[in-house]
Image (tube, rainbow, N blue to C red; front, side):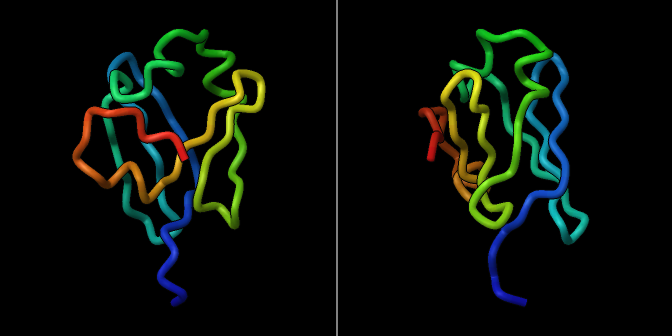
Length: 81
């Protein structure tokens, strides 16, 4: 194993951003941590793609990037990569 935390799927609900990892774990963080994501439609939220060998998530339409590892840090500050 190379030690990289890699995403497999992204899901949303009214409160949380959920990322299923390649190893089967699921990371859930409050959408409130990511103000740009709170302001967009569900269609825009679903328009993501994995970047950087699946270690990051990009929403190209809103020019927002998120590090999956950054989601593990307990901070309410913007966790954009």
